[in-house]
Image 1 (cartoon, helix red, strand yellow):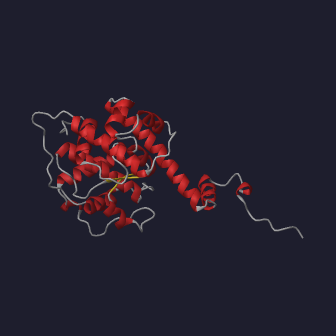
Image 2 (cartoon, helix red, strand yellow):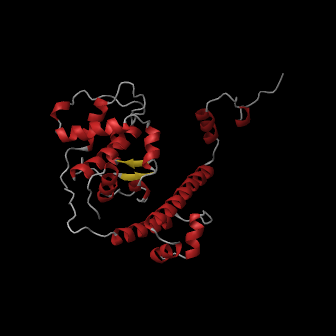
Image 3 (cartoon, helix red, strand yellow):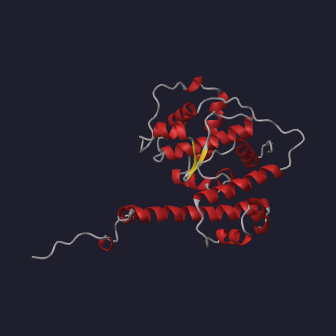
Length: 265
């Protein structure tokens, strides 16, 4: 009788989907490997963000060192991932750079203020998007909803000088997220259900106009594509992970994108 062979990673059939192979690989990881992989991703992201932020602001590595209190050689090594910084060190460096950038931006003589009065709530805006999404949109998940709401908030701040909703948006690992809505929809792992108790016509016309335009502009993209798009945009890039994305930063960024006159910090 032949020995019973236990399936291993090298015996997985080549036709197995990438997702299944990746899942099998991750299942074999120890907690130590998981922690190392997570730290590696964070280090790569930090090195990229540090370099891109420095270049965008027009700073040399020597100037970054002076601003952050770091050694100039360490700044170079951090950008080339030759050091293994702690999370606290990474956040401290990025926070000091952001504070420096905020202090040095020239203020206009008469900056247009951003009202603190929201047009609606995040939950109402989310329900509206759930109600109007295309029947053929088979990727309308919580990830996609979060990114659409981020763009809607940006549009409202840039075009109307008002937040669409009062809830704060934070820079999580996979892009901008409204934590309250994440909790509200965390059990919905597939396509989000349409609301049954929402009167679409009862919403403020400005709210509907913003959300309709955002879905027209971004609803065509898959959830993961939207996630990747936000990773290339200043609001997420310039905000330390898990911290709030500033409304002024969003207003400026989307004003430039939409060619609308935007307030400056």
